[in-house]
Image (cartoon, rainbow, N blue to C red; front, side):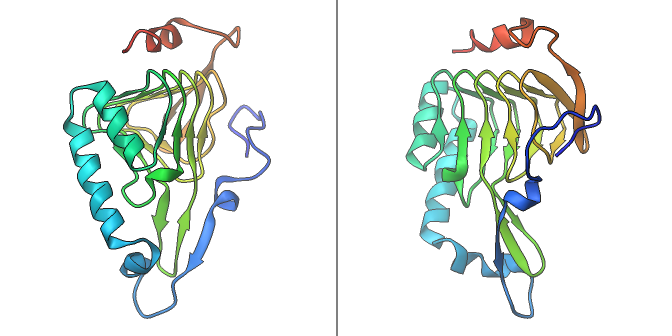
Length: 190
């Protein structure tokens, strides 16, 4: 997958990394969700996610999300109303000191007309996802990367870069490939 500047991000495109599950029948694939995932597991996930979304304690929020299978690194900060995938939260990995902003959404599923697709979401160490951003299944956000508020992330984000827009595209890169002011601020969240 290539971004505007021509740098290679991954050997395969996001859609090629998704697990596809056909759902034959007269209705769209969302009608088949009870066959795809236990309704009791979805209800449990939903209750835990609602609690985590409104919980002001970052430690408690991380603890709750780990209970439903999210891999949460040390010092991760989830903003209020941030939402991990309710169906497959176990497909999310968030690296140490990452920030998931207010009302950001990490999706691991796509229900389409005749199939649903599943993909892992990986947020690298020290990465930041802005308020209201949506990350689609199969996306990796590189270490130290930044996603601007209200962006739609449909492709991998290179390490130490900033993406913005719908769909998100690279708008800048850290000049030294190392720490910059915005990455350092992630270290002081918790």
